[in-house]
Structure formats: structure tokens, C-alpha cells
Image 1 (spheres, rainbow, N blue to C red):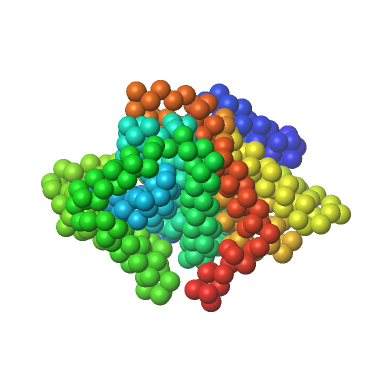
Image 2 (image 1 turned 180 degrees about the vertical axis):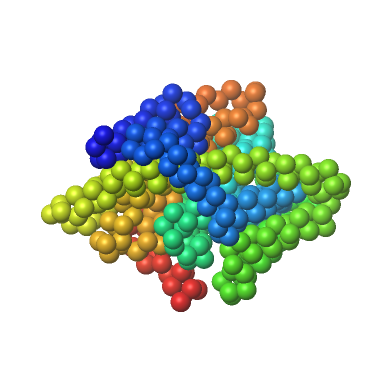
Length: 445
């Protein structure tokens, strides 16, 4: 069989298996095995699979992923998400729509110790939705805001998707972490401004000022440590991780390990963990998530190697280079492809399918690889709230109280204003790369 034809079959087969509902990691492995056996011997194909599985766990940088997952499990089970939420709400309590705005900023704060957008969405959905529903917040806006704000955990460091992008492209994890800070904060502020504008134009979206003020007073009076001061554990963890990383004291893996230990110690100190069984449960959750994610990673690496064997990425890169168009049009075409794939695939799958083809091309065209990492991650954030397969939408759907009765279509409807806001932020980041590269150049040079 012709190698390029095999490459096309490889992509079509992957999309077909995913359309049939097969788990994404298994889809990568099965499509790679089929095409690999057509081009190589089965022994050679299985050898490639074994190498992909080995390198998924042998590289020290890959080890940072389960450690950050463990840190996120300690943080969520240790009540740090609740402290972040209450602390931020204490600062926004006198603003109309304060619970919505508090949720947006709290997701950004908790992203500094979580790294998982799905986990952040589910956690804040459980905490905030019942209270919003009780007070009379618009249901579509409430679930849309939480699902959209959950994506901040992918951008604000430490981000697992940043690590995976860095491993696929051999870029500095520290620079990628630094590059995500300003875009993440920009998006959180933009969401807050958007909510304020929407509430001013339609006051019926949120409860009366009297009801919100009464809730704010209750939360302030009953807070275990009082107001905004509750946020200090999350700030300390972020300071230890990022400070150690950018001072050169820690590698990314060491930063993840130290962050896990500090998070566990703070959760124990704050009496969120009282028994060894509670710690074991958090570790069990982290192990389950790690196993699922690494199956996807192994499959994605194996698939990308089979795709490289077909020569399709090289041929497409050379063909795109011959186009007599400005580099910006090629960039926009790449972004459009990743945007469409974001509607039907998980981020790791998008990276495995596109980066072998587009990354060398964009670098040759003069685009900064760190900057493009933020653009790629922003596109996958948008995909997380875009139909038909918005991962954050399904995450929030799973935690909606039964009495709210919100359909999936209503969730997507609630996400639309925030999706448009994301598109505007994306356009700004594309037009002004210096926004993304300022902190990496400042901290890492």
C-alpha cells in the first residue's frame, strides 16, 4: 500500500472509531495497529507501541502529570476549592451577580493547584449551583458560567495540557507555564466584565440586590477563617510551585512533587483530612485519573509515530510551504482546523493529530512555539464548551441538581456569551503576541 494513502486511512479510521463511541485512547491504539500492520510487520508495529508506552512513563517530565493530578486531588478533597470560593466571594459580595463573578475568579485561583478543567468544573458546579439556584440566578447563565470558567485551569499554571504540549513539541515547560498567566487572568477579568454588562442590561438574570447582600453577610459571618483571608493556602501553594520553578530551585517534576506534599500538609493542618482513609481516597481518585490520561497519552504517542511513518505530515508540511500566501493565512487555516477538531476530540487527541504536521511548518514560518502553545490551548478551551462534544459541558451536566432540570442544549446556550468572549481574547492574543511572551521572556531569560 502507498504510504500516503495509508496516512489518509489512518486519520479517517481514527475519526470513524471515535464517531462509533470507542474510548479515545483505544481509538488511537487500534487505528495505529491497523495501519501499522499494513505498512510494517505486526512485530514492528507492536514494538512501536511498546516504545510509546515506555516513553510515556520513562521521561522524568511525564512524571509531573500524575504528581499534579495528585496535588489537585488533595486540593479538591482537602477543601481548598471551597476556601478559594468563599474568599473570592467575600471580595466581590457587593457586586450584582457576585456569585457568578466569584465563580469565575475562584476557578482561576483553584486552577493554580488543580490543572484540570473538567475537575474544576465539576467541583465548582457542586459548590455554586445549588446556591445560585436557591437565590434565583438564571439557570442557563449559571451553568454556562461555571462550565466556561472551568477552562481557566487549563491555561493558568500548573496546567497538564501545557505539559503535554511541551512534551509533544520539546518546549520549555517553565516558559509555557509563564506564558499562560496573563492570558488566563485576561480571560477571567473579561468574563467578570461580561457578566456585569449582562446583569446591567437584564437585571432579571440575577436575584435582587437585597437577597445578594443578605447572602454576602451570611457567608462573611459564617466563614471559618473570615473573608478574603481564606484564600491564603492556595496562594501559598502557587507561590511555592511557581517560585521554585522560576528561581531554578525545582524542575517541573520536583515542583509537582513539592506542591503535592505542601497541599497534603496544608489540608491536614486545616483539618480537612482527619484520617488516613481520606488521604487514601484522594490518592485512589488521582490514580484512576492518571490511568485514564496515560492510556490516552500512550495511544496518542503511538498514533503520532505511525502517522510519521506514513510520511503524511512531512508531505503536507512541504505542500503548505509551497503556497504563495502570507503566513497569517496559513496560521488562520491551522487555527480553523484545531477549532473544528475541538468540537469532536479531546485536547490530547488534537495535539497528536495536528502538531506533527503543523508545528514544524509554523516554526519555519517564524511563529514562536511558546506563543503558539497558548493559542493551541486557547482553541482547546473553546472546544471544551463547543457542541457537540464539549467536555466541560458534560462535566457540569453530571453535577447539576435534579431539581434544576437543565438540558444540554440550555447549557450550550449559557456558554455562548463566554465562548464569544473567548474568541475576542483569542483574536487579541493572535494580534499581539507580546502579551503572551512578556512573562516568559522576563522570567526565563
